[in-house]
Length: 141
Image (cartoon, rainbow, N blue to C red; front, side):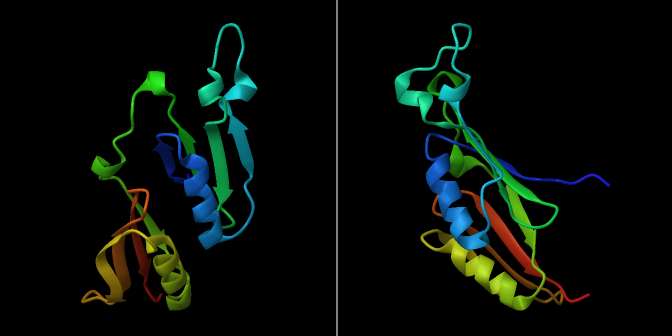
């Protein structure tokens, strides 16, 4: 079966953001690749942008990764605050939902506090301190 793994783009702060995500989800990075590692005559990278992340992968469960990268300045800016894509997390328990909601929303803007909803799920929404939109849900089977 196909899997969906979110891929988030940043304007030079991907490493900071993923270090924060790692502090919430735990685990270790599966891959970290910097632009300077691919620099060549055909693909020149400025010293200023060489340390930006070309690719980073953080396993967040047995079968899912959170992936990301920085955009190079020549690629333009990512409009993080206008990005209405949302990462939806299905937690395995209320405790996990609380841990993820509280950890990821720290320093961000809560749109809907996590609570029991009318449809029987435990649900909340927020934008993290990097402007990434998240939904956290726990529904008993």
